[in-house]
Length: 334
Image 1 (cartoon, rainbow, N blue to C red):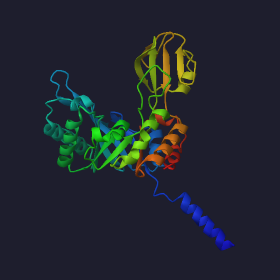
Image 2 (image 1 turned 180 degrees about the horizontal axis):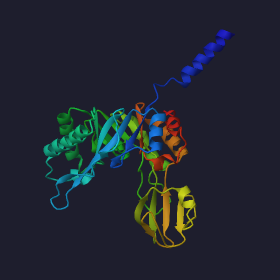
Image 3 (image 1 turned 90 degrees about the vertical axis):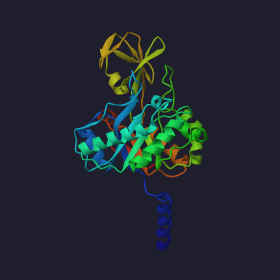
């Protein structure tokens, strides 16, 4: 009987843990100055984080010449030698829409600027990530840029992949990278309606079945940020960062009128922004339950198990909205 018990127990353990190793926990760092707060340091330590995806700079267009230029490069005020740093370069789609784009020159300059930042901060990187929401009209330039960048850099290359690029990959094509990161957020239009543009299960459902057909290995990026959609006379007039429900509940200038909506009771300034009486704030964020639901959806639909779950983004404001072991809870769903 004892032998039978142990056999049953072993079978249970193998079934419950039969999946390959859980994905690693990583983070995006998206501020222009890299310096960790106490809570950020604690989160990195508690989750045994080894890899950080650091936004190095954006690439946009110069106003007068329409030439590609780096925007807001990162400054390191922290020793990051214990982490595997992956430089992330965000390229505005309008850059790739340029008809006369010098792709060779852009690839060389981008690599050179990454190298400069690495040299100054004594960083040895093995991987670089390109973040660009390319479209059907910009795909030719983008795919050529990826080809040249990969060859010239000699680094492992990853790219962010949006849901629409997965579902319609035969049209949008697949960049020649070593792996992709599925950005499982920003699913809808920013609007004055009651939908959450960061994550909506109904919108996600339209894309999930496409994941099994996508031939490129995908890791996953999940959101832990929130923002306020500022609405006046039923029109969106701006996005307000670093706002959360609990904060507004304590502010006597605002009145909660539904789960997501707050109404301005008195005209006031908050965080340097003027709110007129009767303005609305729609708070869009991601709950613990949302994160677990997203993880379960992806686990059921991805063609392969992800090696990493990258949370966007490491910021003390975002972290305070979750319990300490939330990231372990989420990766355990895969």
